[in-house]
Length: 141
Image (cartoon, rainbow, N blue to C red):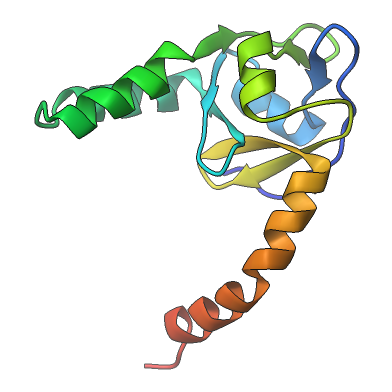
């Protein structure tokens, strides 16, 4: 499980250091792809393969095909270097508007990479919905 938020800087070559606590699960290989809300999703290779298998068993509607094109077409498999860094390819950096200041967020079975300012704006905008959803989800039975 991936938990927590971290704020690494991306270097001029598009490399970002992953948090040390995430490296064990991602060190054997990972896939970086477009996520929702203009962030990037980072999956361990095994989790990405599990999702690919699940998607391949869905019905072939236009919406499914289009989703798969976005999800797989922009994907990039990576293995971190000895310092735990990965290169985020240019197209993915542009998609997520990544510059120097980044936010790396643990989200259960995946990691998300955000522009740090965009992440702060997103969390502020979602605060009330988070509170309301928490009240419903965690209400006593």
